[in-house]
Length: 312
Image (cartoon, rainbow, N blue to C red; front, top):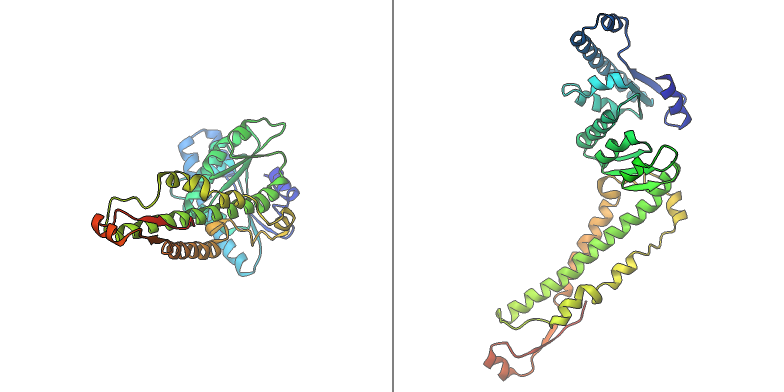
């Protein structure tokens, strides 16, 4: 556990003045039971000790939050076995979420995956896992986004991840720059596809209602084939070019680039989406149907007329 604490200070996960709350099962009573070799009694005593420590640490966390003091939770693999039990995992999750930093040491690949699943299912947040070794594969598979680091540890984590980077410091650029670009591009593409499809579908619906459900098509066959392929594809291609530079994205604070609750653009995306729906509904009323001949229209009941309408 001391090695994990030193590594935490080295990577700035732990800071000076941060209150550390360790959870472990190292006690003289448990060591005596281990010498006897009664596994059932050891499991019961260890689970009771872990549950007691979690309850005490939650009380300490409440006192620290009242004093605006940062808290770091440190737990080893032996204690994690009992903390992930069905009757203690909820209390353990509440304690872990309340802490500023959480450090797990000497944990197995299965425990890494279970912790990721607990956070994902318990909080409902989007989880991102970063690993560089083969024992991180389960954790990468369990998270929604898996980032593998290629290096001397092998390529197993890279082949099992969604995104691969060469060094750990590139995570900041991956989230703040490429994540920002991806969010804006996908949001623009979704809004535009709803816009163009609603414009076309509502105009056809109004055409059918205006012609009393006649069998005459509203547009030519070649227009239907090229509507999404050619006529409305240029805005999607243009949306791939983002006007926000990488230097500007990298200088933005992490709080403004929050990827929870709709990638941090929930209000903006909702307004843009509602605006696109409104505009597309209005645009669908613009096509004008010019009849060639009134007598021909009356004789054929709306089957003889031409349609001239803008593409968008």
